[in-house]
Image 1 (cartoon, rainbow, N blue to C red):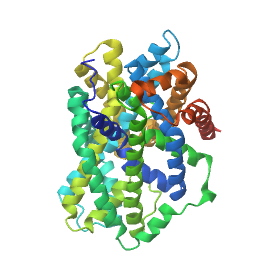
Image 2: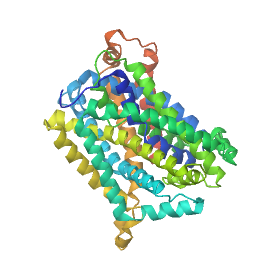
Image 3: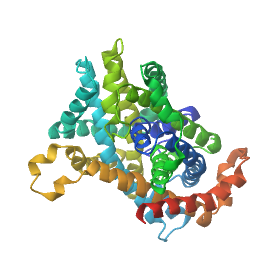
Image 4: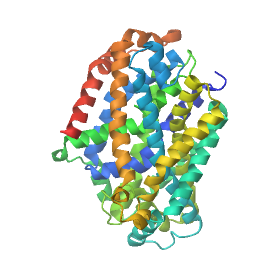
Amino acid sequence: MSSRGNWGSRAGFILAAAGSAVGLGNIWRFPYITGKNGGALFVLIYIGCVIVLGLPVLLAEFSLGRATTRNPVGAFAAIRPNSIWHWTGYLGVITGVMILSFYSVVAGWTLGYCFKSLSGQFSGIDKGKALAMFGRFIASPWLQVLLLAIFMVLTIYIVIKGVAAGLERYSKILMPTLFLIMILLMVRSLTLPGAGKGLLFYLKPDFAKISGPVFLEAMGQAFFSLSLGMGTMLTYGSYLGKKENLVSSAAWVAALDTTIAILSGFIIFPALFSQNMEPGQGPGLVFNILPVIFARMPGGMWFGSLFFMLLAVAALTSTISILEVPVAFLIDEKKWTRRKASWLMGALAFAFGVPSALSGGGMKFFSSLPFFHIDFLSLWDKIWGNVALSVGAFFIAVFVAHVWKTANALDEITADGASFRLARLWVIAIKYVCPLLILVVLASQFF
């Protein structure tokens, strides 16, 4: 267990798990997915997905991880040895590596924009200049690869340090600070001229826009943001002691994660509409609008630098948790050292991340090859950030409910005298509601 690690305290675990959930999924991905899917309607569906789908699966992952004290592959093998179920764990490990590959590209953007703010490049910027700046930024191939490499090395460094000395220590300081900065940004955004239109878009749902793809996006965002379906929370649960209350921990993680996501919308959409920008701008949304806000803000250069630095830190707490999944697999199953496992899996994620880093425009010198016209960032986000996470969550729910059995899971959840008043509702959700809804939404994606 010394090479795997353990949490030093319950508060440290909650902040670290929340740090895994709170990151680019909330502040980068949530606003642009919300903008593409109708604003307030998507927010309502997303909150429903967190409660009905996210929380039950999150609790299932925590309980399975703590009961087995293993990585995703080892956890399934421990409950059902010599069966095909361990392939669900392998899916989680592969999904983690692939998500880390494109996630770290966007994380690298936060580092680049931190330096842009410090150097005063946001001064006097308007929406047209912001769009042009972002276009030039992502079209610089070697800069993108460099930023990806820097962020991956930072991630590997923290993971090598271990659980308590690395992730937990950073999370206790940086996540509360990020929350305070977001509150200040929200206040500023809400006081911009024309902010009311953004609030209307964000708070008044248009139910005529309900569709299967919107549900899929909401569910995918819930799984992506909560780090579900690839075994991250299962792995985090494996470092927990029996005295920790899994129910309250899961509730705290989901609540903190959702709060940050909602706050990001109150920052982005009022500012977006105040600058007459379209809400469905895609992955560059945060990087197109925040520089304009900082340019209009007293002390905006320093405030912008601090925000993008903290956004990078929030992304780092997520990339650490994602890398921990394949690292824990190699430590548990292959008996590798933490250092060796971290460097190998980090290098593998970097290799898969290079096409995403280059596909923003830097591959133009390969224009004669059709392969290089693919937008890998969006493609990997769709395949691994939506579909793979949903498939993984489906099999985790089925395994816990029908293979391991809910009675065993409840024994783990209520260990050391912990109470669980909603146990019957959780059993219904994990047995029937979660698998059925996941299948319906996945089917709508393909048919």
